Length: 277
Image 1 (tube, rainbow, N blue to C red):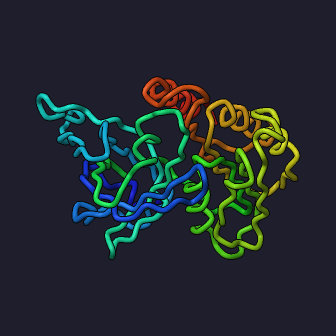
Image 2 (image 1 turned 90 degrees about the horizontal axis):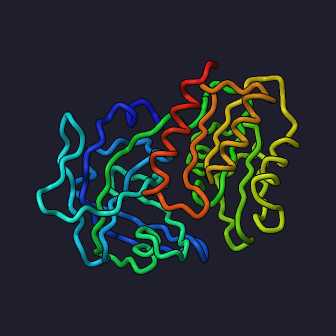
Image 3 (image 1 turned 180 degrees about the horizontal axis):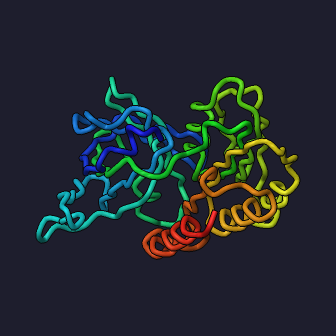
């Protein structure tokens, strides 16, 4: 995300579904639109947003008012379910914003809503925000993710210069989840199957096997919490990657919904930021 996007104070916006596209058997891309997207910062691909999901697709989610003490919800209003997602695409001229939602099949509010979303349905949005996605001055770029961070990885790839060199490691549940990424001839893309290649240990092993240059390296890392923490700690301790040159965000945790994981995720990120570089 660029400096312009980072400087904008997040505000709640009420949007409607313009399009629903099935990207893979486990992912739907929802295109949102509305006049409230006016002023949403251009160049926000890959940035964090909060989506506010109603209990049912035909409901209009309540929005909080912004105050100095944080969000203030309307008295008596049923609070929507807030979930963190990534901007997959934003077109400021058409006022269209894309977000990719993984269909977990677990009955969670986001997956449940996305599975039956239709044109015209309502959704709330707060954002954008989040840390810098990569270090532009690096000589080499390493991107590591899974379906939950596909939009992030695609956004970074699109922002990298044509001559960028590096590696992309994407762990997926099966071959049907492979999606196209922006073409960067110098970026070597590898897709690892989660079941065949194992879980945390296997993805970490693939990272350990990467040829590591002595030049300046930028790392963009996001996905399941245990994987992100294990790979992040290895890169800092064994590869000498500086924390300020790394985007390392645990997007989700196995078998735990975001409501339960929210505080733990922020503790992980805060502790990493506070450790000496």
